[in-house]
Image (cartoon, rainbow, N blue to C red; front, side):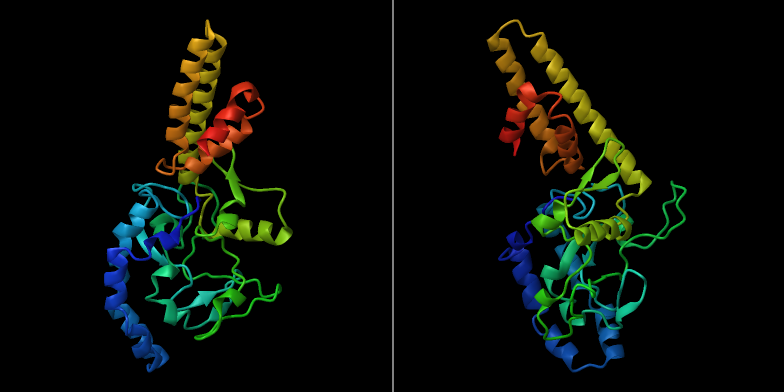
Length: 287
């Protein structure tokens, strides 16, 4: 998961067209009963027209997993579910969901089908069903409200990590096997949030871990080769040339355009002391 600057979509032509299209939808839905709203939502799904602009915002990757196309079809996830929302234990928090946010693009996240749908890991041995589905757990014990139409959403305390939130994105990293790792030096509630996010976003899917481990291996091999080239440099001019090339190589695999780039950063952090004579300075330049 890398930070997504959701507000960069504001003002884009696609967003303006969409906002004009759905401008009166909430007013119409406010006059409906629960069943009428569900039928209205089922028959009006224009949010799919925003897939391309959201796809471009994340450099063609799932907002939750950083997986590129090919790791499941992409779809627009309603971060706060539109029809029903559940607590992490399966209890229903809102039978009718956050219906008034159904057509609010700021509630949309671009998700791979492997992340958004409830399913078992077909490649792994874990029989537990994972995926976001209609789950949107809240920290009720921590004082969260369960927001209704007209309430301030800032008074809710969501459990799931949000890719548009810089702090949330910082709570997870990865190991050499591609497995998601929860940062150790964070408050217990954030460890819990990260743990549940791994579960509900299915970030430990074996298929994803395999892809991520390959990125780690590529980055680790690059670091080794760079270090060998530095050690065998015959003069400062050659060493400088090696470091310049290294910058280009590492910039490519850590770029937001690269699949699973957060894994490459984790690999660099894991090797920072091993190659401290040159990697620390390069990392500063890459950020």
